[in-house]
Image 1 (cartoon, each protein chain N blue to C red):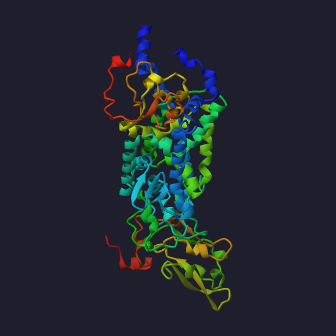
Image 2: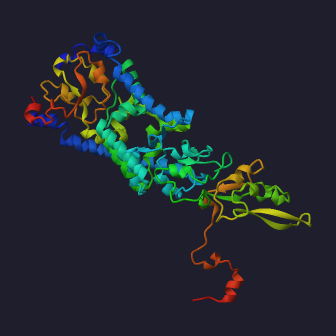
Image 3: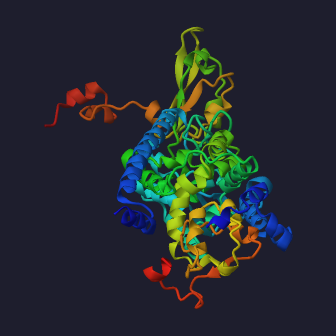
Length: 304
Length: 244
């Protein structure tokens, strides 16, 4: 592993430079741009109604209705309502089931990287961290988001209120932009400052209960990122630098790994590793492709 | 031994001590976070009392547990009456409410806001808008009411969608002039829907008639005071004798 630190100074200067030289600007930023477009498109689909009277989606990410027919709702908010002891209308439950179905298929945390507006803010914070070479300060454990998830689901039982919805930053952004309820935006500022100056990727990769729930939803998803050319890896570490959940990369890049698929559902499928990799190690894959015999590698193999 | 331990730690990621420490730490932090969140939630609930909710809204506590804050009712409202609350804005953040003095409820026959609600925090069993109980109008300041001064303003009475039912003009001798009548706007709380058109239209600088949530506008008689629920006067009741 010594070779990984070989050229650290060059790479911290400009992550992804080698990929840009090798593949060109578009290929080395493609998924990032598409992701931003996706996040802004989803927002615009909601915003055309209030702004121009063209109603595609009504509501916000907490609950919405597509073209006045298909209900969609946030499974976490729905679970909170259920936990508080209220039996909602069928459309809310149906909406949550549809959303869970969609993300179970596409990969749970696709929500985080391709839809959630908070991701734009936390990615910016992470970029600033890198640009200013801010030191890695305090660390918190990745699994705290699951404790947060438990907390968010227990509080409605104890208080009878969907407590998390008071502070949930995702609908706050949408409510601010769609309904002018901008009073909660200070919370986004707090998250931005936290991510920039206190803990690296604190919100999206450590604390957010919505992300934790979608991570669980995506456990069985067929779409995964795979290190298909792990042999070509030159240990430049650019993927580790940009990855919001870098612990998921370790198993596939480990020397002698026989499992190319990133099976850890913490992976947000953002594809930034695909962008920044000059030797083009990664790509999106169907995990049920016969290429990947889809068996759990023997303990002996994984320890090789 | 140490080698075995480190190997165990590598394969499983963490050892028992780390697990216990992380769990304890996380539980403490989550406990604090939970307390903080609950405080925020209950504090802002105290801002609620005067928020007028959309038609069909459940009782405030049930409403807050059910409302998912999606804004579908707000988008369904054709008159821009409903708003989503900002932080510390007189209602729990993100929940719908309206300010009757600005835009009152127009009482649509098809009640689109209730139909749009996916969570059932607006009760779908509300079929006739006249049965809605958004609040109750209260003539809160008789001193400044023009009709109480002997004038014939009558605006609140005229704009009431349930004129002569929710608001009646009760005639009373005007003692000041000695030979005129005063037409006093009188609200029947059982019929008033709380749409707020009276508050909206009231001509004084500050409305003298205001819509208040039912739990503030109404008193409640004790359960044993059965005579209060009859149409008879106390004297008639007593003359009839008690049926035991």
